[in-house]
Length: 375
Image (spheres, one colour):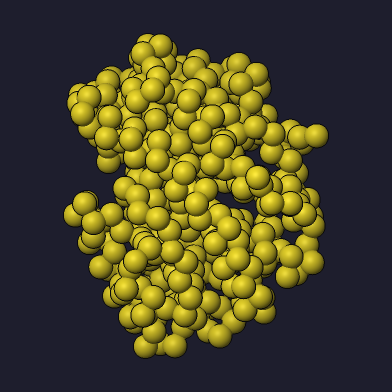
């Protein structure tokens, strides 16, 4: 039985394991990809293997995750645009040179900037795919193909379960594309599916622990003026999302950067009132992930020498990261491309509790609204 929830945002954070299960079930038949979905997606790709992702806000951060996922696993060439920028680009050279398939992402399916981007994609004659939480939304209806989520009603303005479900659908899109392109055989696809199916249970097992830990962290860091969130590779998208959640939920300033960019300017801000939040997880089965992790360890060692206050997100059982940081949040083991779904949830909880520390109406932050407000 779920505990009592004083706010919709907290309830929706806790609903994520079930939301992920429902969403996964839309695209998998047991432990295999549904052939009818593969048939539907077959008319979307273009011969050049190019994809352009257009989205806004949290959905754009999902797009940044999707960019690396589709490039690494499928060998596709992917660009991510702000929807508001893509819809206003009109240079003839850009239109003549690029002929991508276009993927639009939106929780509501009614985001005006993203609808404008979809209309621009149609004007240029591109094939379009929409990933939304509303199967009957304008965006889902207007796109050539729709891949809906099954996150369920999301009442709080800060996106939580719709975000993690977007990541799950992008992961499954990569499995479909990788299979179609011959980049993954049936054994590899089955291995990815097994890892994905284990994710909701792993997430559910940690929610209460993370809730207690992030509540304490919010109390300890409530006087901070700015946070710098750092992540490498596919985890940069989660650094961006964690920073956005903190800004919109608690009104505390935060920015997301690649880990390696800290010393190219932002490090000047680091002080007692400007702590770091660093994604320091690793998939030891992947050489590139180990390299990323080792470089992040070096930065953490430098920050310890500098006297910075650091909250890290690291693998459960990691002995190196906790020795280098002020506070450490542990997450269950997962593969490189599924770690982000686990990483983002404690960051959502931290934003929630920071909002409470600052007396914010976390479900209805000022000056913000959803395109579709759920009742």
